[in-house]
Length: 276
Image 1 (cartoon, rainbow, N blue to C red):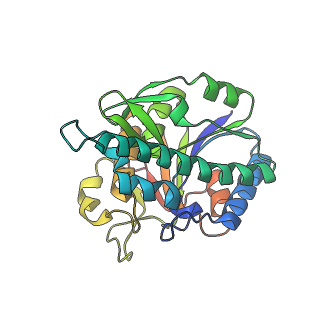
Image 2 (spheres, helix red, strand yellow):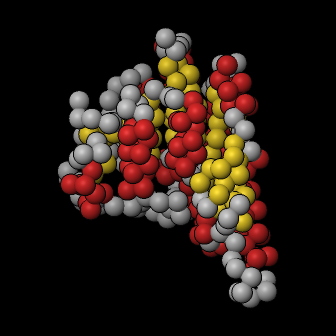
C-alpha cells in the first residue's frame, strides 16, 4: 500500500536563523540524500515537502509586518505602498531559499517540483480560501515530489498575508489525507519546560495538551508565523479531524534522523488523536 507523508523542513533547520539570509547548504544536501535513501528503501513512499522561510523570509516579514495584512487607508499615504514593497520582498526571499532546497534535491537525484503558493493560493483573513490542487495531485501521480513553502499570498480580507507551511498543510491534509506528517526542525522534541529542555513530551493528544500548554513556549529565534505552541495546536487540530493521522516533531539536525523518521521510526514527540 502506498503511504503519503507530508514532510516539513523547518526554517531553523535549513538556515541560520540568527544570521539573515544564510542557507545551510551542507545540511540541505544531507537531508536531500536521506530523502533519496528513503525512496530507495520504501518504494511505496509518496512525499509532499514543505519548508520554512528561516532567515530569508522572516527578516523582511518582521520589518514590513507582512503577515498582519495591508494597513488601513487611514494611516499615512505611503503605508500601503511600503506594505506591498515588503510583500514582494518576502516573496523574493522565500523563492531564493526555495531555489537552494530544490538544487539540493536535484543534486541528490530526487525528482521534485516547486509549486509556489503565491501563484495558486488565495487566502481569506489568514486562512486558505482557494487553492487549485490539480498540479499537486498530478505531481504525486507522476511520482514527483511537490515542494511548497511558507510564502506571501493575496488575501481577500487582509489584502496580503503570509502562510506558513503548517498553515498550508491544514487544507492539504483535508484534501489529500496523508498518513503521517513529519515536522523536522532543530528541537529534538516538544519540551514541557522550554527553554530549559529537561522534560521531554513523548506524546501529545487533545486530552493531554492542557496540562503542558504553558511550558511549550515559542521559537528560540524570530518567527513571524508562530512558534512551537502554534505548530502543536495546528497538528492537534488535524489529528482531531483525521483520527488515523499522526504527526511527529523531531530534530533533523542529527545525522540520519530524517531517514529514520521517513522509514517509520518514532522520534521526538508524537501527536495523535489518542494516547495509544
